[in-house]
Length: 155
Ligand SMILES: Nc1nc2c(c(=O)[nH]1)N[C@H]1C(S)=C(S)[C@@H](COP(=O)(O)O)O[C@H]1N2
Ligand SMILES: [Mo]
Image (cartoon, rainbow, N blue to C red; front, side, top):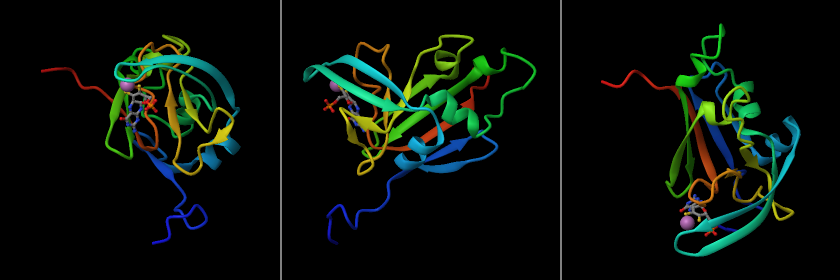
C-alpha cells in the first residue's frame, strides 16, 4: 500500500435510498454536473471553538433531485415526509429533512462541497455544508453515503 495521493482511490459517495437513479458521485462529478455555489460560514465546535471556512459546491437539493427521489409528483405534501441521512467515512452521520432544503419550505442553501478554502476536496471526498447551522456537527466530512427516503407514519 503506497498511501500517496497518486495511487489513492477515487473517493465517491453513494446516492441511494428511495431514488429512481442511484448513483456514485466523485467530487469531480459534483464540480462538473451542477452550478457551484459559494458559502462563507462560521460555525462553532463544542469541543474546539469557532471555525471560519469558505466552501464551494453544488446545492444538495439539486444533486439529489437529479437522482429522482420517489416523491408523489402531484404536490408538496408528500415531499414534506422525506428525510436525508448523510454518512462520513468514520461513521459520523446526520439527518436533514427534505423540507429544510426544499425551496418551497425551509430553502436552506445546503451544499455538497467540492472545495474548502480554495482547496479541492477530491482527496478525501465531499463535505456537507449547512450555512444556517450554528453548530458544526452536521458539517459531515469525507461523505460516503447520502440516503434519501420517506419517513413512514410513526407507530
Ligand atoms: N466525518 C465527520 N465529519 C465531521 C465530524 C466527525 O466526527 N466526522 N465532526 C463534526 C463536528 S462536531 C465539527 S465541529 C466539524 C468541524 O470539525 P473540524 O474543525 O475538526 O474539522 O466537523 C463535523 N464533521
Ligand atoms: Mo464539533
